[in-house]
Length: 360
Image (cartoon, rainbow, N blue to C red):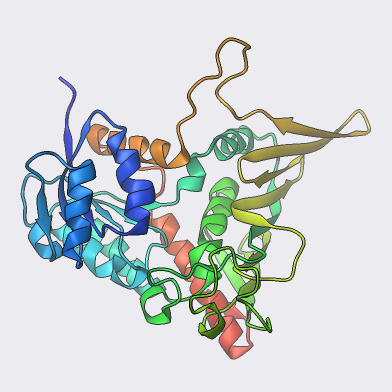
């Protein structure tokens, strides 16, 4: 018989409702049996839509993780809470999927990795852009040696006017930063993953808050956008120990004509190059002294009478994660990898604050 994994959800806000719970509900081997939120009504609503008939509701996550029947916990809280809830859950014997970024600070991310080693439980981070079709093909392409040595990259997460103004997105204490920690974290994770390079040597970064009217044209309206202390945009130069370089650009709001949503990157290798924008993958090379540019079909269909059923990256992420728990294998996103992402992001903020390069 197929093993059924019992899951508890901690934090029943936007990311849980729009990503985690819908994705888990598609899996036949998952039952969501507990829901926790400091606003009890949200946990009750989550139970009614996604839970089993006898699912429990909590307002204190420590009560949820004390349930011995729960094997997996999804942490979907503001960034500031990621580390403590994850660590407590690991020591309570749970495997944990923590929403991105891994933690508000690099020190917290390191504590989370230490807890994994101490408990032997699994921890993964919600970087769903690794699971979209373009990323999966690009990873296979690079790992097969088709790109050669990946030594030059652009890491892109650029919105023209898209500052989130709900929940705690504009709360520096809860979130730890603006677009750099919110959306650039996705693109940086994908870039490092594709390059298979987690050894940064030096970072120089700068944050910007310059727009005269940042609320103008914002796709979600004003609602505090004009008064937030968080950066509107950021950029950085990252040099890896092997000499590879990464240029990072990100923004919630910027006077630009080019938008690259989170999970976008460009990687240049000694044999070929590739770029990912949303789920569009383009490969460039030179063959027989001619420049070649190819767009890869990353959809499941391809024949006239059958279009296929393309699961979302979040659904693939959830399925791979639960299967790793069942099979006792490593998850796709390793905590040590996500920790390096947090360390680099923190170094960019530090460099912007001090005006100096940060060395690892």
